[in-house]
Amino acid sequence: MSMLPFDDREGRIWFDGELLPWREAKVHVLTHALHYASCVFEGERAYGGRIFKMTEHHERLHKSARVLGFEIPYSVAEIDAASEEVMADNGIVDGYVRPVAWRGSEMMGVSAQNTKIHLAVAAWEWPAYFSPEARLKGIRMTVSQWKRPAPDTAPTDSKAAGLYMICTLSKHAAEAKGYSDALMLDYRGRIAEATGANIFLVQGGVLHTPVPDCFLDGITRRTVIALAKERGYEVVERPIMPEELAKTEEVFLTGTAVEVTPVSEIDGYRFTPGEITEELMTAYETVVRQTQDKAASAA
Ligand SMILES: Cc1ncc(COP(=O)(O)O)c(C=O)c1O
Picture 1 (cartoon, helix red, strand yellow):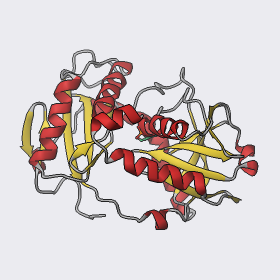
Picture 2: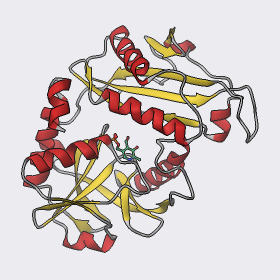
Picture 3: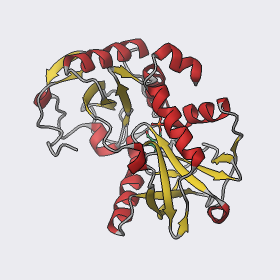
Picture 4: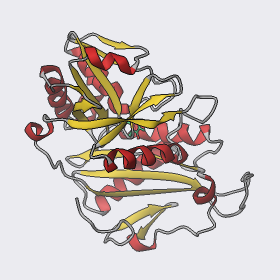
C-alpha cells in the first residue's frame, strides 16, 4: 500500500458540495467532531469503476447520523452522486470510498445543538493485493481485552467514529503480539466481531454468525449470508460463546475492506480454511464485479 500520507496527495475531495483540491480539504482544530466524536462514516469499495452496494452504504450513513442525533444535509441520492463524481474526478476504477459526516465548530462543549453538519467524500485507489491462493492461508487473531459495549451503553447501531476507539486499541495490542487482528467479545462475553469486520464459523457444514445486536450488521455480512443460502448452505444467526471455537472447522471474516478473509488461528484454536470459505470467497469476488442490477438480485 502507498505510504503517501492521506493529507498530502493529488486529486480532489468532495467537501460540503464542492470538489476541493485534496490538500485543502481541512477542518479547524476546534471542531466538535474532533473533541467529542460527533462523527459518522462509511467505507465502500469500487470494483471496475462501480461502487458495490453504494446506496445501501449511504442509507446506513444517514441512519448512523440520526442515531447520533443529527441529520446529514444531503440526501442519499446526493451522496450517491457525490461519490460517483469523486470517483470519476480522481479517475478511480478499483478503489475505496470514504464518506464522512460531522459536527462543525459553531459550539465547543458537550452540547452541540447548533453546530453545522458537514459532509465530505474522498476516494483513492485500492487494487486487490493478494491472490485468493495467498489469502487462503488465513490470518491469525487474538481475543481483545476490550468488549463491544451494550446498546444502552453506546450507540452500537451507528457506524460512529467513537466506537472505533476500542477497535484501534484492540488492533494495536494484537499487532504488538504478532497477530493480524483482534477478535472482540461483547459485554456478555459472546463472540462479536473483528476490529473492522464481521465473523462466521463453520461447524459441520453449517454457517454460524453472531446476532448483530451490539455491533455493526455489515453489508458484506448480509451479502455473504445471501450468497451462502443461494448455494444451499444453512446459516444460523445466534449467540456464540468463544468456547465453541474448539468445535469449529473453518472461520472467516467479512467486510468491505477484508471482503471474505479466512482465519487460520484464534489464540491457539486452529482452523483450516476449507471448501466453504473458498466457495464464498469466489462467490463474493464474482458478485462485487457484476452490474448493480444483478448484484442487487443476488443479495
Ligand atoms: C467494526 C466493523 N464491523 C463490521 C464491518 C463490516 O461492515 P461492512 O461489511 O458493511 O463493510 C466493518 C467495516 O465497515 C466494521 O468497521
